[in-house]
Length: 148
Image (cartoon, rainbow, N blue to C red; front, side, top):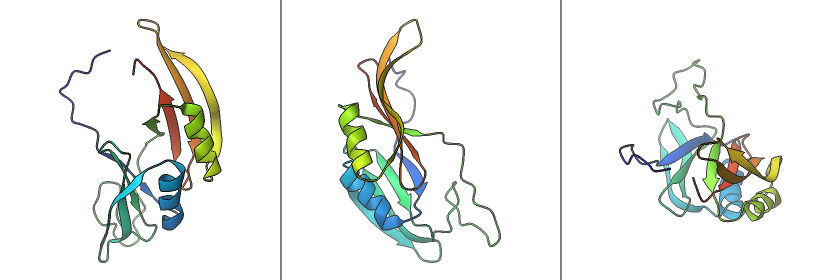
């Protein structure tokens, strides 16, 4: 499969941390991300950080005290949070089983143990995948595939 090359590049996924420090620890120690940039915005974002996956793609973590909505604007008083419909996010890894085990050791909960599966039929794509739940309830997929 070839990319059309016209789509914008993927930059980051944003999550709201229940426990900011634990979330930074989990992604740094458990999944190998590096803290790239920490920031705050008075009266809007208590704490936030961009965590680099190592390839210039990031997870942006917001502290639970941030009053930022999913679309980036300030949440108004008495307004519900507007988290969207992200089902999971996927990390490309060289070794699914090792990544899965490291995530579990860092406190993730297992959802789907490492397994090999197939997508589609023409062409048939083989994938090695596993799923965990991170410290904030976020679902993380690990994927290894020569075709995707």
